[in-house]
Length: 447
Ligand SMILES: Nc1nc2c(ncn2[C@@H]2O[C@H](COP(=O)(O)OP(=O)(O)OP(=O)(O)O)[C@@H](O)[C@H]2O)c(=O)[nH]1
Ligand SMILES: [Mg+2]
Image (tube, rainbow, N blue to C red; front, top):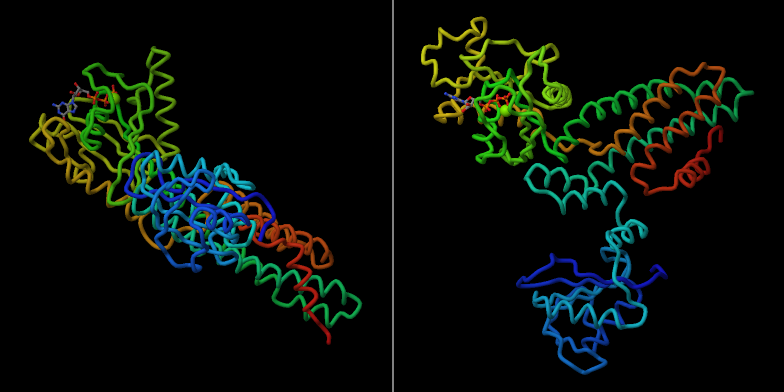
């Protein structure tokens, strides 16, 4: 397939294990396999073989070997796989022997996947999905990564791009036939409607992208409220460890403290913040408060903490209806009528970080909110900044095309070309110019 070096690497994790997998990819993979086992096994069948160092005629290990000739392999090149016993000694020896063979060298990070992309075995979004899948820690992360890896998002990008290219073809045709007004008008009919429909689809996808980012990076749940209400104590309870310092001194927490947890399969970052109060003379506390406010603005869900011994405050403006309100230290006030949150007492979850009372209900409420907002439906199409920025630029180009005056048809065409290029760059699979050429070749208007 490709004429480059043949690469090899330990594909399974480092350290002692039952089995370790060493993968070789490139034109020298077959000769290496033959040199080690004495023969080339049947393609795509697992066989047991003794691996010998051909230079010393020394047995390296007895292993399961696989021969997957290109182009139907992971990288699209010839691939050999050695499933050896996972001892550091066996692995080190096999890697050393492979390294001593002509034309073989250790792979760089991501090089197998890069070759798979280069050889058209997957596009960029699928490759990113594969990367995310390998790093997935929770069920929701796994599901999203798998959907991207198997091309579900790529299909949307491709469909959008095809719509665009179809519109562009019509616009180009109307330029070509601008002398013959009937044909020009016929070619343009419906283009603007289609572009508006496409633009709306992209805007919807962008609106959903926050969900994708949150699943990849963790849903940010921010504990906020006045000093000393017990934010840090509640966070420690829910995280089940003493992550944040707790003390009776108001203004204990200054820095933002993040504790990753898995809530029903969804990755959540519990975030503790400095107590909010105005007029603090302590410059460090003021910095902490500014950071807390930034976390609240950038967070996905706020837990507003109050307690009966601290004057009640309303959440600052900007809090959405999703904010979970907690009356902590419920052990101090058994009589709920004495709460100062008279207006909406029932909206408050009564809990005690000290006794544990109400904590399961609070945790369930947080989990429910997180699940409602982030745990439903198909994976969003845009999950990385790269995707989001490309979609935004594409929408800008589409808007410019939609708004372009009828007599400036070239302006519309130029914007559509730019919009198609933005989408093409996301998947990276198809050279946009090539595709446009082929579409225009086949586009025989007026014939
Ligand atoms: N009785 C009672 N005391 C609590 C409870 N939760 C926290 N406290 C106490 O309240 C005080 C403040 O707790 P923290 O968790 O540090 O409060 P905080 O809101 O993080 O405070 P800052 O970081 O200063 O904003 C400590 O003395 C805790 O032991 C509770 O449920 N019941
Ligand atoms: Mg605190």
